Length: 141
Image (tube, rainbow, N blue to C red; front, side, top):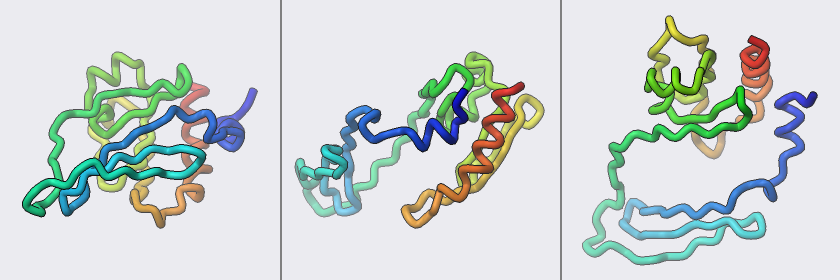
């Protein structure tokens, strides 16, 4: 039986699905980013007229839940704030690694909060042992 830590260390970029990301910059420039041969390729598709702000507010909820293992799910803060969805997936423990996101169902779930600032300079590896310990504890229950 492999631990989650061993599985992550053995993981390779070759196992990732191909991803295409559409980006609108602050100046309104529209780009498409794709990964190929372990590098990001950026293609400019168009530039919005007027040079206005490219920010587009997205108010739709992200309720997608990824099944990593039958006992380990991955979801957004929107999913973590949807009680019906959490019950549907039989969630018992929630690892909250977001900065400034509250845990809302304290009497329903066991929470572990580790506030990680989502910026490139953050060394997320330093948080792994604490996260893995909580995930392993949850798996045993």
